[in-house]
Image (cartoon, rainbow, N blue to C red; front, side):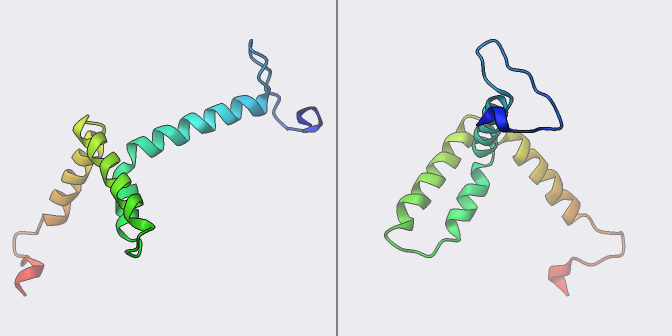
Length: 103
């Protein structure tokens, strides 16, 4: 079936014999794994939005456990640093501007 696939870009097989589609699948799998590992905070936030139920409780626990594990190993460092910088930008005020909470 892969031989019937017509692509505008020719991707040659590697030494192990993976086809171009096989190489694409491997690359997509690696990207999915890395993004899932580095976005565990987003996964935990998504899990928090689930309706409370016996089915969602293990999902929430697993998502928060994974987020805590990645944070403990420092994998969320770049995101945390960017988030801290963004909070500073949001808190910045002009010299004569009031804090929005004090109106």
